[in-house]
Length: 148
Image 1: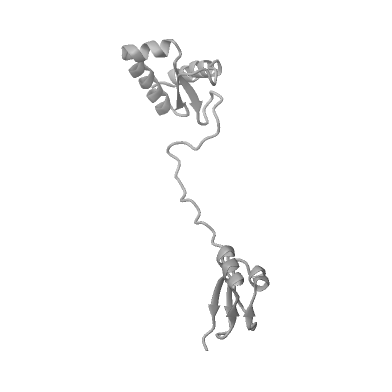
Image 2: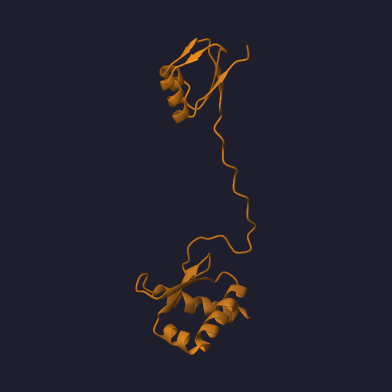
């Protein structure tokens, strides 16, 4: 497709998109007009839709509309080009869990609260109160008894 036709497609599309109301029903099809290949696909899409009688009528009644998308001249939003390399999503960051060692013989709610999200290593013969055990479960505190 020549550069003149490509420019013409962009200008016509920009004018058509500019006057398209955002929320008046119908089908809105997002299109990208960043490259000559995008323009060719857009023209083929319009011709295909127009060649089906029912769809052609909907297109004429503006029940099928097109929404500009991409970086082209039609005032589109900033979007990554279709052929841009994709980067893998960053791995979720796991919170750093610290192992906190205590010499306390009785493990209470207060001690558990102070170590929220951490692992609490307690003496082998330590007594863990029922309320401390329940709170540890809710706050994600792992209580481990040290080896004797």
